[in-house]
Image (cartoon, rainbow, N blue to C red):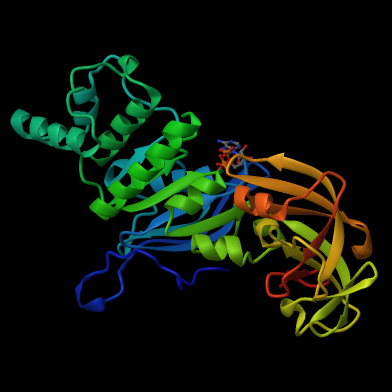
Length: 376
Ligand code: ATP
């Protein structure tokens, strides 16, 4: 069970240094669809003003969890608390949230203004003022009388966001809000939504299968797999200190090195003894899987004696946009294939030629371990 909250990063704290209060508590949520277990005992606490992302592959249960929180689906077991109030059995309309779906879900026959005002009550002038405020907030003043079909995808999603925020809900639920948009618009809207969320301080829960989206937008990321939570942590912890092999693989690229512990702090890889700080307390003889991110592999311009060094044969060089990914085969390490990421400047300064053997180093402090004989 992972429910501690050590890494809250929201800067908007209440006065006098008091910790933000708990806003949402999900206690032991279970959901079956026939014989299929969609959620198997989810525990999650979310603080006031926090931006939390539910991240995981298709079918892991993240949308089901969001829908249960919204009251659009019922849990078979478990409890949902909002500000210490049990809302498990309340209908959606009494749960005080705004929601944005992947497909824009605007009413096509209503203008932008009417779409935004849809859930608003009160006098006409007040509703009008609120719509103007919201259009301003999302940077779309001047389009009030347009219809959804006259807007781009990004604009429609902004309007959907304005509609979700119209009644000033305390909770904002986002279900893959950017996945229908093209890459450039998506990146732009990511920043806009994040800024808006900070400005309003509205507690936000976003479902996504896009790790980059989760890492760039959320204060905390909840990684899910097969209906359970694998890890909860800040984006940095999730990326740099994954708790399980699944998280390491799902969030970013990994080099996996299988070997046997030789002595505390060392494992055998091919003919070499490789130092790895994470193995300091592993018993000799244990089978381990050690992982290293491609950007942590060090490439040297010329050979020099050093720990965890070998020569790698350059097999492939791939341009990924802002950086290159190099594939190397290392004979001394049992012929393993390693991927190393480097930027344009590093590549130029190393001056590699085709077929050249390149000195490779594995930093002992970046090699992380998941034992193959017991879970960490
Ligand atoms: P995706 O990103 O593909 O939507 P997800 O992680 O959000 O994935 P869910 O939509 O929560 O996944 O679905 C979890 C599992 O439950 C899936 O295998 C899905 O097929 C199943 N499921 C969801 N809703 C129902 C339903 N109403 N009836 C039967 N099975 C369902």
